Image (cartoon, rainbow, N blue to C red):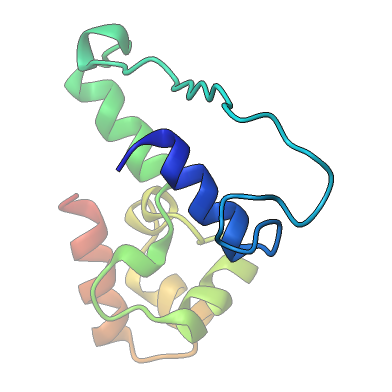
Length: 119
């Protein structure tokens, strides 16, 4: 399909043409040039890389506790309101403190702390 016929179909669709090739509205130029611009593609070589230690520090420092298996929105909200909203904060805490903050059993909290420390 040529660009001209595509434009004609678009005009017809939006009501600017009756399909016979003549415009229903004000006269339009017969040909229209269309330019499509795209953002340049970036490769991984264009992006700065972090060391493994930096990756780990970045991810656990800001990673929300909801990424830990067993911690859903309710527990996450409770932990966050007690300053334990990140995986790093959870890993630095003890099971008793986490259990109290999340209002859950110490056994469950101990599992969460163990999972956070293993990240």
